[in-house]
Amino acid sequence: MRIAEYAAPLFSPGSGQGTRQFAELGIALLLASLIGLERELQQKSAGLRTHTLVGVGSALFMEVSAHGFGVAELAGIRQDPSRVAAQIVSGIGFIGGGLIFVRRDAVRGLTTAATIWLTCAVGMACGGGLPLLGAAATVVHFLVVRGFPVMTRRMAVAPVAEQVELRLSYRTRSGLLGRVLELCTKRGFRVTDVQIDAESPPRGGDSREKGKHKEAGLVLSLEGKGSAHPIVEELTDWDGIRGVGLRAHRDSTE
Image (cartoon, rainbow, N blue to C red):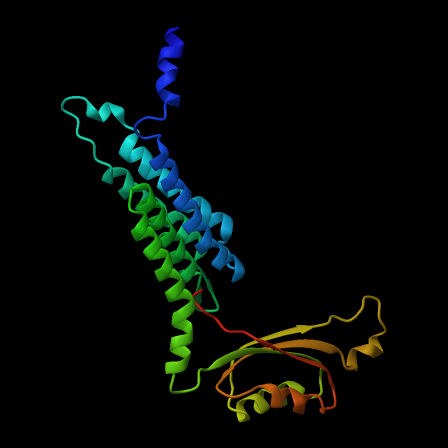
């Protein structure tokens, strides 16, 4: 009987475990899922599951902070839900920091990390009994992430410098590398990176084969304001070029 008496309050739908608290968790689940779905469709590192768990977890932390400490009602102890809220804000930085990385002097993942931070705030708002503010913050997320890029592209006066990767295989010892670099600079592109993968001669091969041409792979990172397709068209007519490919490569903070 004593065990039943102690366990009964744990499953009682009273203060802190009523319809309002479950509704707040449900709203946090919905709003966080909407934000996570947008990130999932953009194929970001933190997608639907991450954002949903962050939002619901933050809401639950707020519920525990506001209603879970019955001992705080004792004389001389004052309940302070803001203490748990402050720990949520600082703790979410570990997840955001893990999403940011640097590649070729370009920082990536900042927008996704900021979205995780915003989702945490949305969950805290829902758990704190402010679902309208959480819904408004969700609308702001879609406005910033989806609407701002369209607006900035329309406001841009000068053409934006495009970054592309030119991949080709060519015959070595024919002077093609210098000619390719010269062609790119003449077309108004700046070569930011050069990677060469030369094939090693086969083992046990004849020594007379050492003087012959080999095939090598070349990857050029180009930056310019024009189109790189004329470069590809011209390179396809060159002797010694075995294959040419072009891939768009734009570093961003997403």
